[in-house]
Image 1: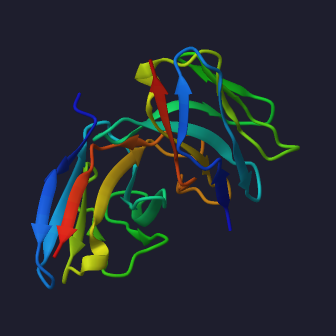
Image 2 (image 1 turned 90 degrees about the horizontal axis):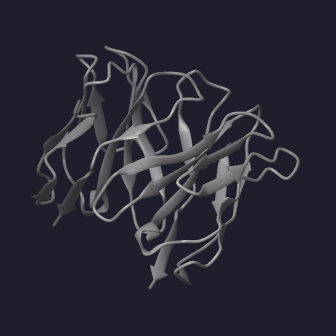
Image 3 (image 1 turned 180 degrees about the horizontal axis):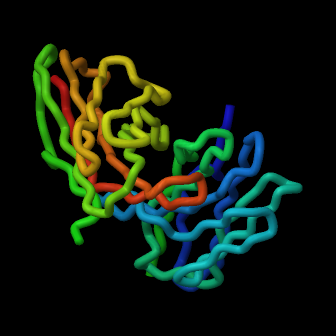
Length: 114
Length: 113
């Protein structure tokens, strides 16, 4: 079956540091890949997505590139802010069904200190 | 446009009690999902629906039932709650297709004593 493996957390960085959160996946077919962010006490919300190989998703300074050859979708940001503190989830959407089901990683907690 | 809403936000049950969680979306989305989130385990799919009147089992369906009588609503029922069902429950919806973003509700925190 499908699976998503994320870099284990928690991750603690100082403001303006460079962020990388690794994500690799296992899937048949051609899934779409997503990064969702969850702020305390809230539901998940889309951060960025990529729907085919070599696509780059970007939003709010975050970027991730769909690498089919390494089955990866690593999240990066050049300079994090305290407001980026949250839990980040990597996910894929199953291309083998027409139900839009997603498989999520376990989440990586990021804390940014001033 | 409220997006996805969930009722209630918090609930405490005793073992054996029953309850229904309500999810409503105003985006005219076809597909709806129920997940549970447990510490260190990401989100696990309980049940889902690809349209009004249809439901299907997800990864962890045991102990739960669902109904989708109206397109905008997706109900999750616990007939006889157990402590193992203590969790945060999220509802999500999507327009359809595997490239579509899922839109999540704010969650329901359920404790079963």
